Amino acid sequence: MIGSHLSISGSMADALREAALIGLDCVQVFTKNQQQWRVAELDPAAVDEWLGVAERMGWLERGGASVAAPTRLVSHASYLANLASPDDDLYAASVDLMRTEIQRAAKLAIGCVVFHPGAHTTGSRPDGVRRIIDACARLLDMPLPGDAISRPVLCLENVAGAGSTIGGAMEELAHIRRAVVDAGGDADRIGFCIDTCHAHVYGEDLSTAAGARAFVMKMESTIGLSNVRVLHVNDAKPPAGSRLDRHEHIGRGTIGTGGFAAFFASFIGAQRAAGLPGVPMILETAKGRGADGRLLDEVNAATLRSLLPGNPPAPRYEPGIAAALRRLPTGCTKPAKTDLHEGAKTRRRGERKEEEEGAKRGEKMRKKGGEGKKTGGKISGGARKKGGAKAAEPGSTPRRSRKPKPSPSKGRKPDSPN
Ligand SMILES: [Zn+2]
Ligand SMILES: [Zn+2]
Image 1 (cartoon, rainbow, N blue to C red):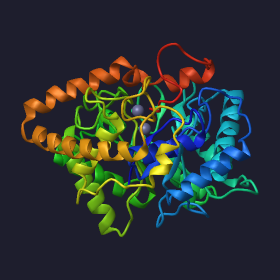
Image 2 (cartoon, rainbow, N blue to C red; image 1 turned 135 degrees about the horizontal axis):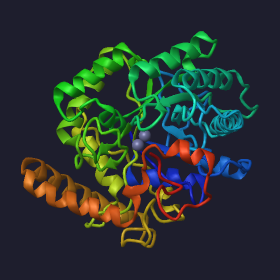
Image 3 (spheres, rainbow, N blue to C red; image 1 turned 180 degrees about the vertical axis):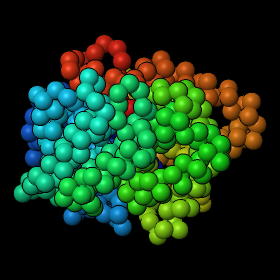
Image 4 (cartoon, protein in one colour; image 1 turned 45 degrees about the vertical axis):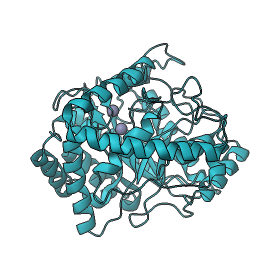
């Protein structure tokens, strides 16, 4: 299942409509402005609209996600929360913000809430880890709201490992989950989100077949494949082991198409061997349009599909869903010919043709390395202009936790995950 992190600006449901427009199988959202501590109540009308569109897309799982039935709806918690903070006030506020996020997710039928474990900052690493464990156990113990539709799984995300951040190593993540379960936490509701860029820059070299295989074997022996509930599929700008968190378009970075193909072959092969279904694979790469006018998410999703075993096709949804998108696609500042102003039918026909041509072009480019680079440059250039690629800053979570800025003029955009 391929998806992307999409904006909820306009309305929550617009993220779903955009997913339908791009042809995705799943989506990740921030359920609120992720740079604010204060959270307004969810508007019941917005919840109904979201659930209605999710239902029309066939994405609504009442009762929530399970290992056997992976969710298509994922949320990413705010970066302000730091569950490893040695500062008691900040720690309490972080637990409270996570509680709010889980409750919102439950009302929105979201199956997985992804969060970064935290950073121990001025405290010790063991103390930071203990605080994360306590926080997760407490969060799992809290009752869900009466109108909850799902029972969200808390997904610890592996991090790039900059500064005092916790959760770069698979062993550390595995230890946290085990301790949460030992403390009474519901084992079905605590799992992991594995980010390929973060793993690569942390030190797993995913650019080679041997490195990708070794990483999948490490996952199996530490965190357990059935506990991997979400993947973040991002290529990396910096080299393996750099601990710098900079996402790159799929196939254009230091992991490369060969690395992704090898990773998918190992990971999905191991999943299938264990009888596990596919999990949501979310793009967190720069948004906008490439030089050819195609949405970068569409380009990246098509590249991913071409690298997956069996080359699964993009899903299609009733045209009315995408046609009701009331804003521009995420990261776009002006409409393209294919946006909004033409009928949905025209757009779909046009896109299908573009997609076929794009796929042919992509195939040619993969065969001839040189041509590929040319287009790759264009893609990156277009994204950089819009500032999307700069959105992911490493190690900024703990610093920002202390002094959140309402709308920073540079750095991460409110809608960009890392
Ligand atoms: Zn990242
Ligand atoms: Zn991520």
